[in-house]
Length: 189
Image (cartoon, rainbow, N blue to C red; front, side, top):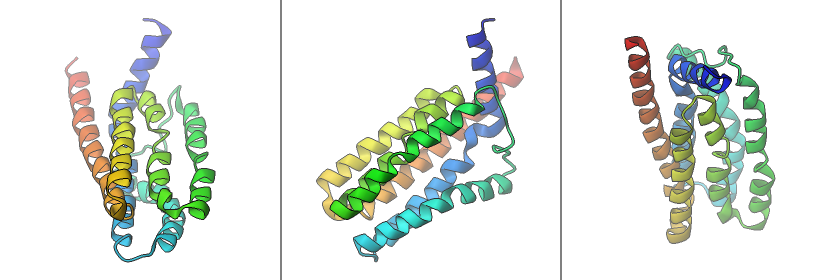
């Protein structure tokens, strides 16, 4: 086996062990559904403030889900674990755009958040050996949100976040099905 093949096998084994890290996108479901609900009664500036503040709850919520479902994604280390920091650092670079949008045109904020907070998904997918699945999440999110933002401007603070939550739900289901199939196939070998 080549180094590339060995590395892929390690990435896939991690994917199977951690079931694709599904507690993290599960936290995204809750965060974005909450923003959709908040959009029904908060004005855009207040919605934006709470969207920014509560984004800090995603990771602790993921840790809670991981504990509830006995998924030890924080303890698992692989040869590619060092890639996580640059992936998240790259994603966090969208925040100056989000903050600038808040000051320049608050209507842009839901779109910037929805796309900006998904920038790391292809890299995370690569870390699990499932680039296509995780990249599909980011692309579906970007296209769906741009369509809603462009064609349904009155739904930017409600339907747009609900659509992100729905993309997360579909992704969690896909990850669970795919990782279960992967584990079953690995056990059969």
